[in-house]
Amino acid sequence: MARGATGSAAGAGTSAGATAIAGGAALLKAPWVPRERPAQLGALAGILAGAATLLFQLAAQTGQLAVAGVVASLYPAGTILLAALCLRERISARQGLGLALAGGAVALIASG
Image (cartoon, rainbow, N blue to C red; front, side):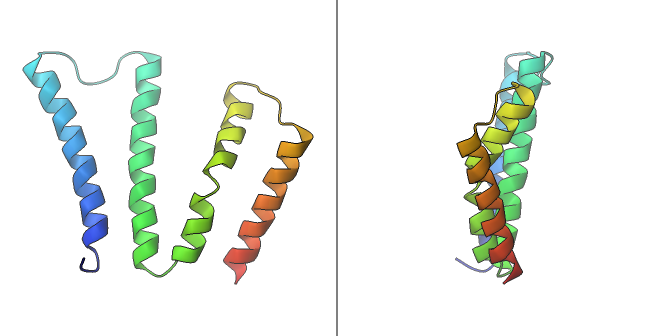
């Protein structure tokens, strides 16, 4: 695959998905803009996931794959933090230690 083609494919896939949703809603004569809070949060999650995919592809193409791969592998840490912030779940001492060690490891890898 030519350099730059992967990022273009990711962007095209996201655009195709958005077009399919809007087109399907138009055919069904249904509103395609989410009105309820859970649907809005789901749409936001989709937008952020698409942006994350695009940014990961850009990092891979510019030679920062080692750092991008390590940061991307920390998605479970994001889940723990979101659960603590949004759902008021408690972070156990073991989870806190894991988060701190993972953060330190990312800092060491990113610094070279």
